[in-house]
Amino acid sequence: MDAILAVFRSRAQAYDCAEKLNRRGVAARTVSTPTEANAGCGLSVRFAAADFPRARGILSAAGYSAFAGFFRIAVRGGHAFVVRA
Image (cartoon, rainbow, N blue to C red):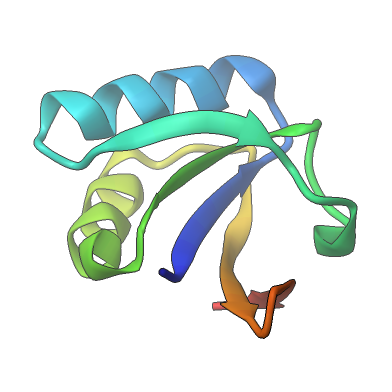
């Protein structure tokens, strides 16, 4: 299953984002940012790709100053690939 990462440059904002998404019905959790993303503070918010449109709207309305972007994690043939979403 594909997943989306919302990468932040601030740990506090990553935690706040995960909490905000969970309160609004998007199952999200904080995870370590993969090194392939080459961005962030080390923490990202992970959620299902099916929730991407809803989560994108919530994040854009929140106006996080340390938001670095969205990345997609795709698992193909047992290998995980990280690409900008």
